[in-house]
Image: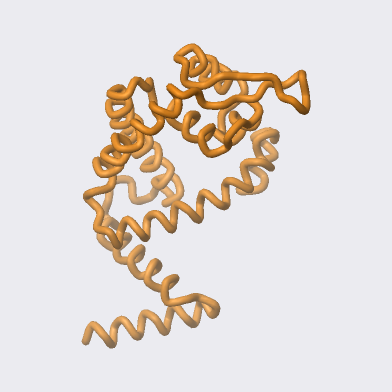
Length: 205
């Protein structure tokens, strides 16, 4: 079949099932369906795609953490979590401890450990909250600013290590998909973080 005719037919079928879809939506669908066709004979084909995605995301997270640890050691940062806290604090200015921990998606105990470690390293400092003396606020020190500045170029190289095997077009598609997930879970996380697993499971079973 002529490739143009095949593409038009695929678009027509997609549009009939997705009346409000855009051309960009179709392009993402088409690329995803082609990739699924390539890998339809992968090991464990009976495992649901959501589970396979979760496993792959987990592996990519570990790869990224491994690369980041090597990269960040060159500027005196221990791991990617410390880097994340530094950059979040840089963006937020002078938040309360609880606000920084929440924005970093950490539990309170882990967050306090990270904050205390970065304070001991001289990268951030705490001071009384002028609006609530029971609370503490945080800010980057001069050293923290210098280290966060120095970390950006090495993290850019780390990003190339992880994603350079993708074309610019593939990187753009991946970014848009992950950004969509990030927006969804940024809202969902606030609702689910205090819920028990049994209640969560009922929502998504």
